[in-house]
Image (tube, rainbow, N blue to C red; front, top):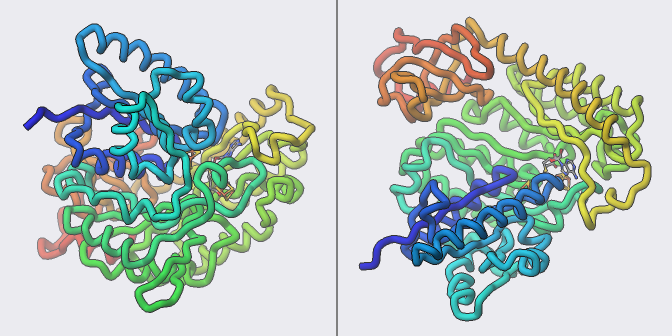
Length: 465
Ligand code: SAH
Ligand code: SF4
Ligand code: F3S
């Protein structure tokens, strides 16, 4: 048997790219590839790229410059190194990549990466290969399943794509163009994936999609299932201690989803619900199709279903035409909601999106200043939220050994890292922890030793957080 070839994969962007990267590794495993952390000894390097903002996309070309040098270096040792550009920049700028970067052998879009083995073979014969089609066949049916040992190596928390693409066309956003139209996977396939994951040690499932709560998949009963309905079914699978979903759109929050938060202790009370702006004028220009008031009402529905629910969000500052007054409306919204955390970005014009043609660009210095003000407010809310956990006892799902000797790190319901001194046996369990202090973003605590020994991790998860 030939020795395994080494694959190095670098992912940028969102959770779906992280998931896709794992599935690319699964696709190439039967071809004899094993993962390596180092570019230096890789036979194949894949850049899984993100196109969402200019900075994200530009990274690709600087990275390709470094890979050209690495490839030349490998050649001096008589080795070849193949280079693949995958992900959303590949989709948006595939031809340009081929033109500008001779080091690239294969360009493959987010809907075609199941074809990687054939594309690599074609590149070997023909020099280069590009595939940025949105194929009619479902890539998920063609992707090989991960091997049990791969699932175990990836840890107790796993992503599962349930929905992909977006039909919302916010005027600033490339996602509808790079990921294509919104598609939901059938319920039965998702259940199979989750079953396989939990049989191999996974305890937390995060359902992912660009618009995950727009989910409307074919159910085994011939009906179309909502995300809420899917959540109820997933909560029944033995071994599923925690369920999360990301990213949701405020317009697609329906009664099923709210009810799931009321009824399912496995469903974590932490929701990422991007609003982008607090100004109705800007929200309209962004084509978000909701007002600030609509958003407040959605938040209220969640809160009335589950009191301990917390929220995070995304914001864009400096969208074309944003005035100081518009920006103040964003600050006001943040003060009213009170977030556990949020991401904020300076508006970045993206080629081909409607907002890129809008006049009235906000001056870069104004954008910087607004971003700093918004981030200061968000940071203070996040800090207050984390500090409020000190002195409480909460359930923690333990994930891995921490860098500090003897410590195990896990996450609270709100994804806060929590460290305790314990043996590695607790990895994979949900256990109550009394939180004593906060160091930057990490909580330090101790296991509640009085827990009865018969208490299994499943039972503890049903107590909620
Ligand atoms: N599907 C999610 C978000 C996808 S992109 C949603 O509907 O909210 C992740 C975040 O990147 C967005 O929420 C937005 O805040 C930010 N973003 C997207 N396009 C951007 C752009 N052109 N400039 C700056 N930030 C952008
Ligand atoms: Fe982009 Fe808007 Fe779709 Fe989110 S909802 S992915 S921001 S177009
Ligand atoms: Fe980026 Fe594509 Fe995700 S543009 S944020 S990698 S969907």
